[in-house]
Image (tube, rainbow, N blue to C red; front, side, top):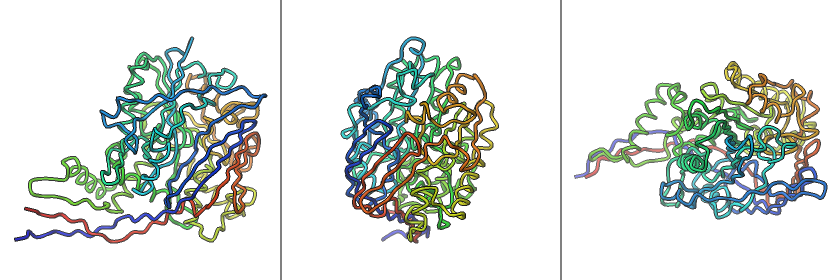
Length: 511
């Protein structure tokens, strides 16, 4: 005789995403000529951002240092692998002189994957497999080895940790059917173990930094990084373009909240989210989380009780995703941290605030392509976004150990690019470039709490403009940097409508 079944009605996330095919990617940064080909065939919103670029210098520019890729071959035995099961990797340039025992770890960015389908695609790229990672990368900006380009950190041991998990080094799960490994947390742990064995255990100074999705990762892992070292070591963290806000998009929806819910649920990021945040969720969410995690930790079995896992409830996923948003995390990070962010973050404007899914009629296209084309209501919307960012960092800024550099620019990631990090015409606040501001904060030379006046007051910005036509999109910095991107078959990139439908979670009593 069959045992009775108990059915619970809950909501689940049905994520439908469209992606684009990008080919012949060509970038020109100042006098640098940068070329790369990217082919996308899947119809999913892979949401890559801030792709690093391969650089070759012009005759008038110094050749950037090229640093070789090192794979952590022992990582596989510890389950620390990229999405496709290949070993993770990093690039290390050794320090010298006064910086021989100082370490800077830069966590690579590159968006997230929130569905099986776009994670399957992602594992065919360098964002999900070390098979496709460049064998060498240029070290520029905060990674440069030249004092005239990187005055405070040029002779440190400088590391770029490659990003191949799709959840800001925070996931811990797998999908056997799709042969996907969501092992970001294990990659983080193995990489730190590897670097400690390479000499980082003897560091007298250390800085964990990251850009974009890597900037979020530097927030998530900051206190863990601090715990690697004795109290005698000076340890601080830098998040560049990592303040992703749970902001309302132009349609009144929450595009990024829905994306993060998918990431957290799919990759089981909740296992590694800070308990200081989880404990502040509403009581219903905390109970659901506790039961869910308990069942997972016991492989969903207790005696003859078996839970057949569905997509989880929408309410639970959305609640847990709140602890993936930096605005709910930064004030509780104990380690000194510096937030570097553009108040009008260009990536968030394109992909979170006004993506095609939230603006199907293209009313924001002109404004997104060039801020000078924004009407008064659009400008006010952007000012409200800036105000939300300032509100999000208010409590964080109260600590005298923390630092801020929030300029009123339409930019994204300003520490890895030489023209924005430290150059003759790089962005400034309080008459200081970003590199000098970060250095002053790290070495306690002065308090740095630099917040720009609202747009359009800052003439030092390197703003991104987007010029669109049928076959190409050109991103142009207002001053020294220019990026040209050819996009073919642009089929609603970043389109990610979210549908909440009813589903049934079955708790089956089986023989």
